[in-house]
Structures are given as structure tokens and as C-alpha cells.
Length: 261
Image 1 (cartoon, rainbow, N blue to C red):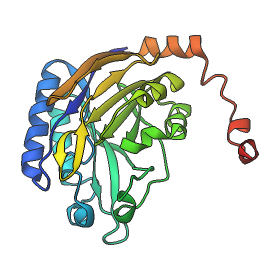
Image 2 (cartoon, rainbow, N blue to C red):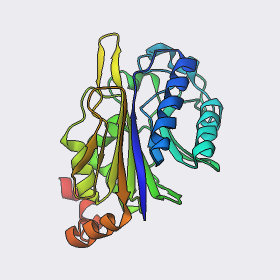
Image 3 (cartoon, rainbow, N blue to C red):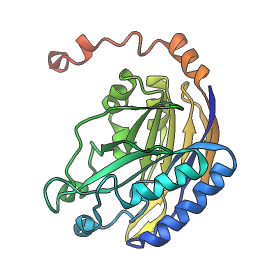
Image 4 (cartoon, rainbow, N blue to C red):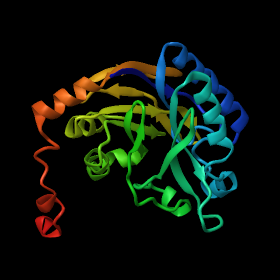
């Protein structure tokens, strides 16, 4: 099976949800016009990132307004969209930074950010599950920004059958870690990252799509737009047969606490 995936790269205006959604819609429309059926959006694309003590004010239910917006776009194009938003928690004023996957049929799944970064720990509750979701495009796993730094998260998704990992990010640097996660798990990685600045916080862009052998197929650079490339499920099979990383994984050894003592 072959499909086109796109990683949206956009600057977001802090607190201006209407403007951010309009920009996201325009970029998704453009990517889908080029044939993309899987589209990744950046971390907190609807609200901006540096909200700090105001995060809870912008929290919403899932499903809710932003997933409804994503669902309308998905139905328009027959595509699947992923990105992260601020989700209302069970405890008032303790939200989650949650990645969502939405298709023409509506909300497919969600996963809260596991590896919270810096001041995020003061305002968000951490996630503690990593589960991929079945779609007509293949089984898709979600990660948010710093989650990429912990190989256990990507490995858990791959061991549960993920073939494509979508990273939604607002990072100051994307580096070889993205390639490592793809090659370690013989998966495609679609990484969407922000550009621009918020206060003293720069976002580097460099959104990219990486194949199961760890090769960067396409990169968006520093400009607003998107990286778009073909995903070929046969290449996933080839990488897993040739490399054998998942086949040879030994959970009884690697997940035993005594292995680390």
C-alpha cells in the first residue's frame, strides 16, 4: 500500500485560535490538494505553546471544538489528521497536552504527552499510555515533542503494531533522534514542528518524513509550509525482515529491572 503523508509547518499566534485554525486549514487544504491522506499538525497548533498559567483556560473536551474542526477537514479531503491540543482533565485546572487522531469517521483516538518538558510539569498532568490506532492507512502511533527522546515510547507503539509514528512538536531542535526512532522500530516517522518565536522561545521547523531505514525522505526547512512524501508499506516489511530489530527484541531481558542494576 502506498499513500502520501504531509507534516505541516506553521507559525502560531499565541491565544488566537481563530487565526491559527484558519492557517492550519489553508495548509491542510494545500497538502491534500497534492494528494496527502495523512497530515500531521504541530503541538498545540490551535492555541500556541507558551500559555503557562493560562493553559487551563484554553482546555477543551475531546471530542470537542478542535476535533470537530479537524473532522470537517478530514471529511472534506478523505484524509486523516493528527495534532496536539489542550485537553480538559478530570480535575479542574489540571489539563493534558493531548495528541489526537481524526479521520473522516470522526475521532479515532488520543494520547496525552508522556514526557513533559520543563515548565510543562507545573501545568499539565502526564500521560501514561502508548497505544496505536488502526486506520485504513495502517496502524498509527502518536507522540508529542519530548516523547521522541524516550525510546521506550516509540518501542512500545511499534511492539503494539504501529507502522507509522506521528510526532506533533513545538521544539527548538529536531535532530538524529527522529531518525533513530524510525530505524530502531522499522517505521515511518512523520514529524511536524513549529516555526517562529513566542517570548524567548524559538521553534526550529525542520519538519520531516523519515523512512523505516532511517533516511530523511523530505524536510521542510525553516519556511511555513509542509513536507510531503510517499509512504510505502512494502518498505516497512522489507526493513523488518532485513533488520530484525523487533523480531529480535527480548522483553524478558530488556524490561527486567535487574538488567539496569
